[in-house]
Length: 198
Image 1 (cartoon, rainbow, N blue to C red):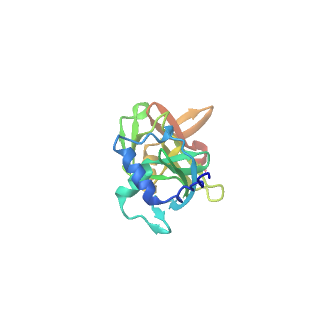
Image 2: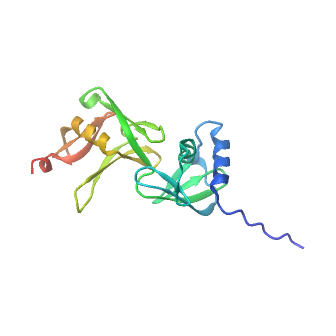
Image 3: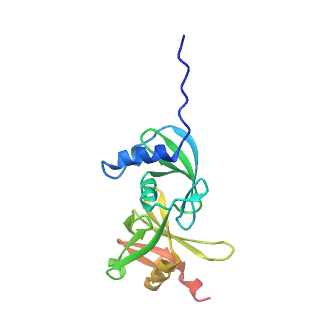
């Protein structure tokens, strides 16, 4: 008589924590190499301000948030926590990270902008880590982002964005004068200069 198929246990934060800790012992988890089977969605959400929630309750332990963020992966428009053996879907309200500070070194085309996220990832903006600004079509309010890793962006917080605006300078891009930022040898447009004059 054949043995009945065993159903894998439903996804749980506890299983993910154990697997992520095991993977992290060997350095940063290589989530880009992992393609485990999808095990379902987990009631976990990252709010726009970077707060992680599990079962509707904020996760108050920052080491746990950092651990989860280390196994975060984006595929298309969906976000997953992945380990070598399972992949579970989570909800991300906007970007999974928040850039809470930055340092600037150099001037003009030689400037580098290095951002720090709320989970202590540091990333220097440049061709592989672009800055982009999306404007709300109704209000015109800017939402600035910097690429952290493999499709995972950080929303740049308001205080940092105001400081970035102070560093902006004009540059002609495709025949249009843009007000923007240099970092890592790349120029990132923030707003067309003509919109500043109106």
